[in-house]
Image (cartoon, rainbow, N blue to C red; front, side, top):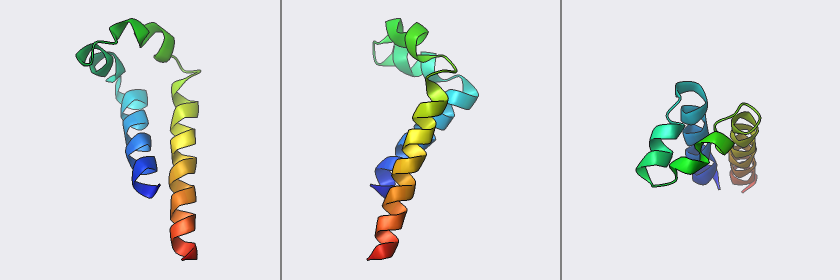
Amino acid sequence: MTWGGGIGAGFAALCCFTGRLPLVLGAVGSGMLTGALYRDSVLPPVLGLWLIVMGAGLWLQRQR
């Protein structure tokens, strides 16, 4: 859970702050989704969700 959250948060941050999302989507053949996903109303909440997943994983790890 911690690794998945970290990887997801890192990828979301990369797409949010550097503009790499159109390149990534084009590379995997999903360039038509760029208009729907490359908006400020989508990427920051996704980043927040992955950070919550990572935080929950760290919390559960510390509980053990």
